Image (cartoon, rainbow, N blue to C red; front, side, top):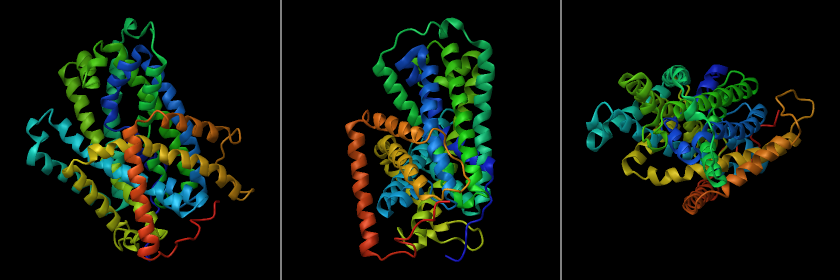
Length: 437
């Protein structure tokens, strides 16, 4: 591949990609589900789940300092445990992003239906969905700088309505709605924590385009820590306002819009709905930027056909990977299969997290002893604690999620074997990704 990707992403670009990956459409509906499970304890559960996810993000922060090329968790696991393990993590990571892009694009029309009911179904829905996907695909084809600008814009756009919700809502809190905390069962606490750890997922998006970051080994840890800090504070404050201002939170299908309408009137409900529209569009934009970098990384290391690793001579983007990602996402929106595949997201995220935490322990031993990079304190305590927490969450997953995940693993094995034995090898197959710095 003669053309190379451009290193134009700065620390705030990476942070925007991380925040955009975590804060999606879920924040506009999850407060009700968590409140129904844990009542007035729900802000505390948000804080706890944020801290748990922070431990996992810390492992990504250190692992990210060992590499300067694209791939994120795929690279970390491939270098530590070999091409097969790396491919499975890369395949799962890409699959989740493709199905998420389809699901969120579909959700966009549902939110738009608040203003234009006729777009929620039929041919109109297909046209709107395809227009959103095509537009964001073209933006990312034209250059990573344009893709980053769109992510930055949408991230700011989704945070502003939430900031208004928090800022105005704090002045309308009712103490009797927040205290006393009341009773809650351990099972409900565990179920809510499981739900929210997945809601905090997506921070790993910012590690994937490391090859286009100006100084990835310095900026990725900073961006990860900034992302998780801002997201955790935002989520906790949103839940405090929702619980403290809206008595019908647990039963509401539009919790934030209904709560905001309560203290700001109809304009508040419309504001939050617009925020949901911007948020879903921004999420797809971020997925359209990061998802294709996975197929690029897999091709660059010979685990997919080299075409996926080709860089456009003018725009310096992985053009075919972007087109392929957009086409698959669009096909999933038409087929509706993304609804079933969305069940993969729970285990699939942990399928990235557990191997990455394990890989960090090995990468430390493989790296040079005198290299200067971000290093977690307390030795192996944080990675081991993160692994134990992830395994505990895995044990709470449903049988259907396990079944779908097993099917995805089998499909990944077939793709890997077909590429390795049936279609030849790429230029780097079997070679190290890059010596850990």
